[in-house]
Length: 403
Image 1 (cartoon, rainbow, N blue to C red):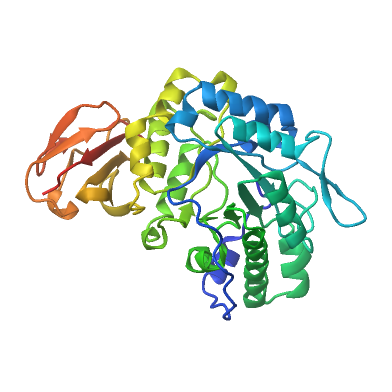
Image 2: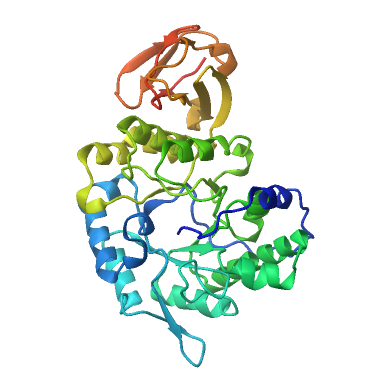
């Protein structure tokens, strides 16, 4: 879901300096998200027009395209499914979603899981009914429907609670925000149903430091992504230094995939997907499934790249060094294997000067036998070898036995 207001950088910078007062930790939710969740979210393609039929059709297409078999399990409804509350406070769906339980049953029959969306505020980003004051009631409702994933988007909680109850007090505002996410986390845990809990609060107040303690399985680390190279690269750059916070059951979330959207080049789509895999990020596609081009499908279903993302160690990639316009990231994998991503992040057709690989900076000391995960070919990496990449393209490698 797109948050309508730009986040003031000064406010974010100030928020990250705040030390929160201790809060009581909620019991851990049932174990979910042992590896980064994979699936599809409705917002990028359908936005506010999404319907029950769209979700059923999308589930069908995820199966038919081979995406389910590649690991895409969650079919997530974003904003605009909500109707009104009755006199008892029970939330009902709107006319676009006549029977959420039946929809969940249909999605489950396809071997998939259903996700839903709400906000800790009185309204969602699109102005529909939020969960403020009804957290336990809504959590029980989701569980009764068979919901498997909740995206909880801050939105109206900012003006309605944070700014209203604690004007000009950033520390108090952050405590209110944390308490709101904690409250829903406890409510989800109390249902007894394993529901993935996704924090969408734009990375405020170093969320990665406190989210796992209150039941968060993933948390946005930045503002919203856009289907433009500069947005993708800016978000990638902001993941540096966050690797130690990711692991089984709790993941940094640099936002949904834009693969296949906008005017991204094939190289940019490939690099975007590769780096989200390297980052152990949730892989939530948001593309036009009915009209998915073969080359986009090939990217989204590359089993070798997905295996990097789903590696059970759950180690997020670390930025190692750069040379000119080329960046090098590495990720440790199960069994001592290693993944290496070499990316030309510059705008020139090729890097501004020849890039020579420095194995020593990667902790490697002799010729390495690697596999190029986009061509499937074997490649020997030697120290100081010349590597030339087109603009915004990537060389993604797996070394089974690094030495």
